[in-house]
Picture 1 (cartoon, rainbow, N blue to C red):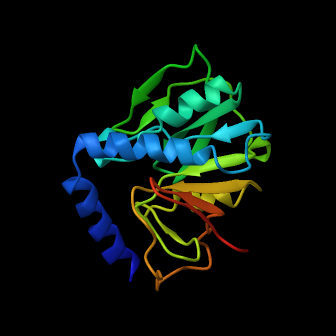
Picture 2 (spheres, rainbow, N blue to C red):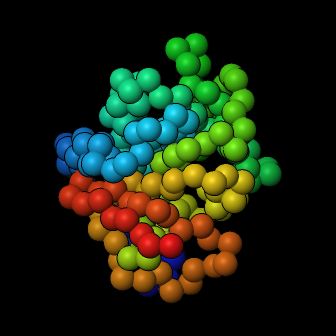
Length: 187
């Protein structure tokens, strides 16, 4: 399947899902995360849910990270440069939605990507090799090139067989967590 077709198909599936289903699935994904060996790590980068896109609700993961006393990093997007700045999430961090409804920190303590141990990645689709389809702007691929970390996708759905138009610049996942499974990809 080509990225454009996968993007369209999985956006439609998300839009057809009920809020109660997405909530149950998000809780199951958070519980499945507890099954993988990442919890000795310290610095966790987490995306904040875009409700309008019907994404996985990462609040459940956020609660796990806080309970385990992890350092949590969230990003702010620069749409002119197609890049992200990364900030430590603290009790004083103020979050505001940007013009694309992405919740972002207004400011804070910037964290270099060299510190990141684990990155949770939003996606629309992924294949059995760990290749992912995002929203198409390349923000995460550019960001992931700057860090050596465990890359974990979060998805309501199981993988497709193959994404046919993978680019050399696309960064594959190490894991993808769904409500039913933990998928680990070989390197």
